Image (tube, rainbow, N blue to C red):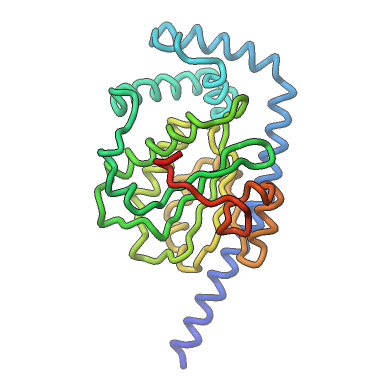
Length: 274
């Protein structure tokens, strides 16, 4: 009887944590949108900072000449328009890219174990024209491949997404689907590594991340990963209750562009076929 009572109490606590995450997500999203508006208002300041940062970065790395203003702006935004911090971040990224992607891309033969599970798909755009990506956490198998292959898979996916951005777009919308997720799918090292790549090497590419079909046991892993998420990324994460799934997604995505597994019209396409 005590065991049943304790189990019920644990479930109730996890349910409260999930609801707290959802409420925090909605508030953070509003703050993020307000911050974006402020940045747009200061457009002239940003242009000035882009020029200063470019001159500063080119002194240390001549390859910055090949970097467009949009990239410099993304790095500036990621560091709250602090030129010195953004410059350090950009130079670190360029050095990482030369080492991690000496050929300029990740070949599919390097990540065959990851592609075999169809855990990353892409289809449609949201109401602002941003590409939609769906990642299936329950399809990830930590025993297949290794951490290095997972990193290469993440970079492969991000490069694919960025290459297929519609003209005038810099960001994408992601849906993290945890249906069927269990402890056998949990991979903290992979989650932290993926976050590091997204935040440090592809800053300001993520517009929103909807986390759907969340099992309560996932909150155990979430508590470990959460401290590694930077403040800007936290504001983009939205936990969605199952009963509000379609209505929440339809706020941002037209039904004609919504993946069919969420009640929309478009079938998902594996990332390698995009």
